[in-house]
Image 1: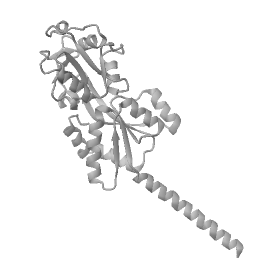
Image 2 (image 1 turned 180 degrees about the horizontal axis):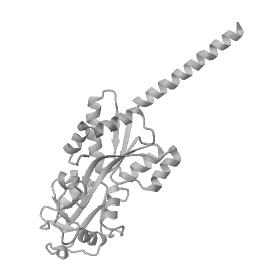
Image 3 (image 1 turned 60 degrees about the vertical axis):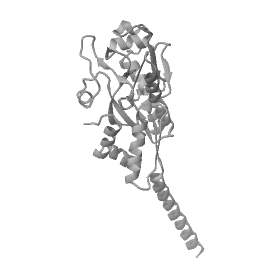
Image 4 (image 1 turned 30 degrees about the vertical axis):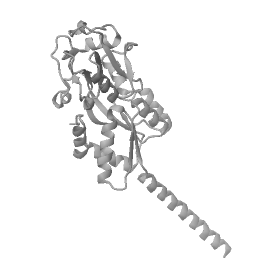
Length: 283
């Protein structure tokens, strides 16, 4: 009798343990989904979260910015479920995820952007070449008259170095040259836009969705090329010189809840939010 009692107790404990594990798994799936990273994408992420939660009662999605680099660090450390990034993760960063999680991160392109160059509405400049932009942001050119504008000192605004937009601009415009020390680093794209809107001598850059209250200049790939504005057509056909994908990164084998959210982001409804915010859908 005593052995049967012991066996019954052991079975009961095993059943309770298994039940607890399943309950834990269910709880993990129902836990809040954390999204962190790109300042360019933070408004988009918040709108996705709002619309998804409205359609999926009981789901909580928490979205914060801080820059792509911040989101990537959080993904590596396991402190966010989804990293929003306006640049691709570097091989070294992917390796850090693989070292900790056993496999590389999962990369998903969730939208497209045309990195835009902003000037004040009162600035007569309407287009700039990539070479002119490089000269301005490396400090080779410091006066608007040298790029076809009215005489006056150029005040360049930039992003902080944790920003994916900062990295993208450095790679694709500056060809990895250093920014001029005169470039004033701003904590977010909205801050860049606000600064440019106030200062007639200024220039800045950032996501297309933030381009309100300022002038977006046409970009020429070559000095003799036609200037091109970011639009759905020029982003989709790749003719806009500063077109770029926007990413979600997750650790390997995301939970069912995270996977369902990402599937919805890629759906017609989710891509409709991309258009509403001011970015460009995946096609």
